[in-house]
Image (cartoon, rainbow, N blue to C red):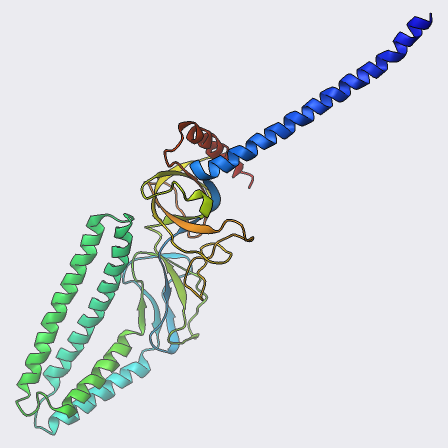
Length: 371
């Protein structure tokens, strides 16, 4: 009887000890799993980096008037699509037209004092100024496209088109300049290089340029945004009125920690997940890797040194910008500047690591549904 009682008393103690042992083992397994994941994350950060600190990037231009005056017309709406050379805003022309008229009268008076006719030189000067404005616009467009072509964001055909437009504009300017010189020569040897006439021509040129600046146009095809403008507002020279975004040629800038840059180089493939398109995975390739970074932020430029701000908030690993060219996007996919992107890099250092990264990328593409 006593032995049976002791056996019954010991049974709960054994069950309790067994349960405690199992709980301890389970805890060890959890710690082991966490430790293994920690080691994997350290290894993956160098061999197969992944970051959610990516943003859609692109060319932006602050549309800024070169002359001041009341806004006469706003010809586009906020966030509207525009074409190259399309009129956006019209500043009141009247004061500038008066200045052109005064400059022409001053030129006429100066030439009449030499018994010469200013009509031909007046018309030639107006044509030459208009041609010079077109050359300036064509050159700016070509320079923007040249930067995009260097990283493969536009085709050589697109760059050749902008180059041809610049050459055509330069040829027209040469013809206009020749016509102006011919008109000067027609004034006679005493007046051709006369300082008074040259001064009057310079004033006319400035007045014509200022008049042309009253018509603010789109630098290229794209969209205009960040516009809060209405007729009657005062446009100040050098004060931005709106922002132009080249939405035809976008790329991704990923801010990558410095310990993840070891195996990144130009041309390595990447996979991208956009918050705007959850459940979908897109592809691209690294084009350039930044050599400097500063502070905290995302696609923000530090005014002190002109470098992109890093999103690092602690003194640990700094982040550097890595630019990525997007492969052809499917029909219906439309990206927006500064949209958030998760980027996975495939530097070809580990087959198993990259297959695991494929899994993580696939999982993350569906997590964006609830992010």
